[in-house]
Length: 219
Ligand SMILES: [Zn+2]
Ligand SMILES: [Zn+2]
Image (cartoon, rainbow, N blue to C red; front, side, top):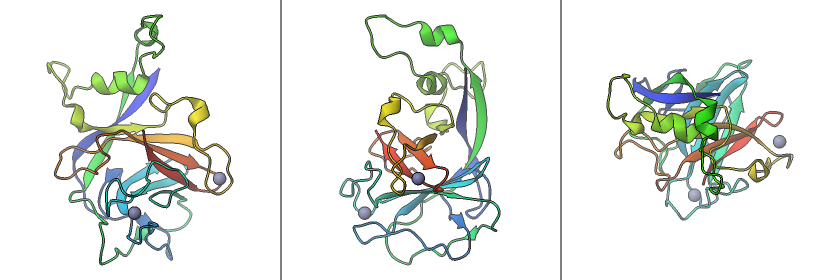
């Protein structure tokens, strides 16, 4: 079984078309910055190029905890899947509100192959089988000889299955109400100063490919 970890790879230009957290979103012409029900703009979290376009992830941080960003139908989180057919360009940033992260962090993908036995090897009495993302993340080391990996270098993972989330808990698409597809995990980030505030939780990116939209939820 393989897991594609997303690893911190230094800084990147704010408007670059590379996998990154932070910086400025790239979107088709005419796209306007998404707003939350609280009246403030959402904060831009991540630009994730995927096979059929770019996933663009937003979450409200104007008053952390006040807006229901764990609810897929809430206006406090937003995911867009922008197709590549149209040119993607930097979006105009609203002048007020919490909109940008303090740093732009480049992401490189790192494929981890997990031993299926390691996943199966758990106590039968324990209902919770080891989770592929958890195993891959906890095993992360930049150099094989490192004694301990710096787990904060893991910014999340792309594809695969959602960590400790049953299939029947997949959120419904806000537009067509069909279950959405899991697309990525996002961790808060490399350092407290530049990270997204997720209340210490893991974030989940879901997408409805036909509707080209999705949700960003924390557990
Ligand atoms: Zn809000
Ligand atoms: Zn849909």
